[in-house]
Image (cartoon, rainbow, N blue to C red; front, side, top):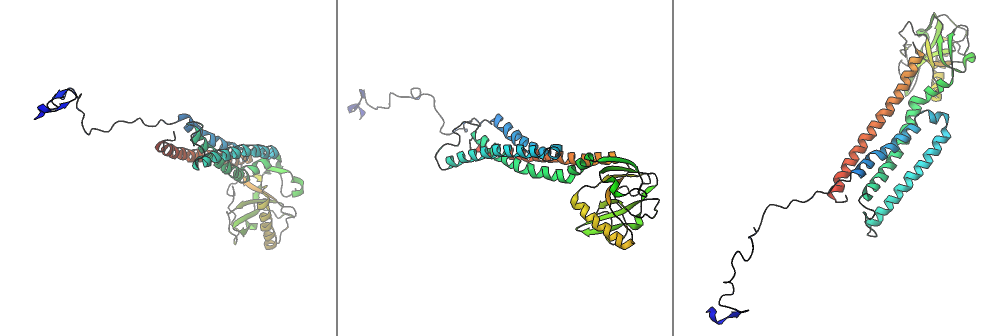
Length: 324
C-alpha cells in the first residue's frame, strides 16, 4: 500500500531508509547527575574579613587600656574619633549600597566578587570598634590605672609608722616599712557597701600610736561584724611592704571603715593612707600589671574566635547564595 505514496522522492515507507546508525549513538533517557563546578571561595575576602575587624578591635582595646591613655589621653581621644569616623562612614556607605541593591536600584555585586565581603567587613569592623573601646576602658580602670598611678609616685623605705605621719608621705606609691612593723589585727574593721571594705592599722610591734595613719586594706577579705582581717600577706611575718591604693571610690569607703574603727576602738587617724600589704612591692606591681595584660590577651583571643565563627557562617551563606 506504500507504493502509491511519495515522500520527498522516496517511495514506499518513508522510514525504511533510516536505521540506528543514521541517527547516531543511542542516548539513555536517564543517567547519573552531571557534575557541577562548586563556587570558588574568595580567599582574599575571607582573610580580610577575618583580620581587618580583629585589627580594629585590638587597636581600640590597646589604646583605651594602656599607658598612652594615661600619659596622653587627648591623643587617644583624637585617634578614636578619626578611626571611628573612617569605620562609621565606610560602614554607612556599604550599607547604603546594599539597600540600593535590595530595592533593585543596583546589583549587590556591581563592584565585583569582593563587594559582599566589603559589606561584611564594614559591619563587623564597626562592631569591633564598638566593643573594643568599652573593653579597653574596663581593663584600664580595673587593672592598669592603679599601676600607672603608683608608678608616677615616689618609693620610700624604712618608714616607721610610730614616728611618721601621713602628711609626710602624701606622694608615696610604694613603701617599705621598718623591721618590726606589722598589722594590728585587734583594731581591724570592715565596712559593707555591697563589697566589704577591710582595714587594719600598720603599727610597730602592736604598740599604741598617737595617730594611726598607715592602714593595710583589701576588699571582701574580712567580716563587717568581727575583727578578722585576712587581706594580702597578713599571715607573713616577713611582709613589710605596702602598695598605695589610688582608686578614689575605694578610698572613700576605706575612710568610712577607718572612721568606724576610730569610734569602735577609741583611736585617732588624722591623715590615713591606704596600702595593699605585701612582702615584695615590686613583685606585687608586676602581678597587678600581669593581670591587665592577661585580660588583654584573653580579650584578643576571644574576639578572634568570635570573628572566625562569623566568617565561617558568612562563607557558608555566601557560597550557597552564589555571591562569591
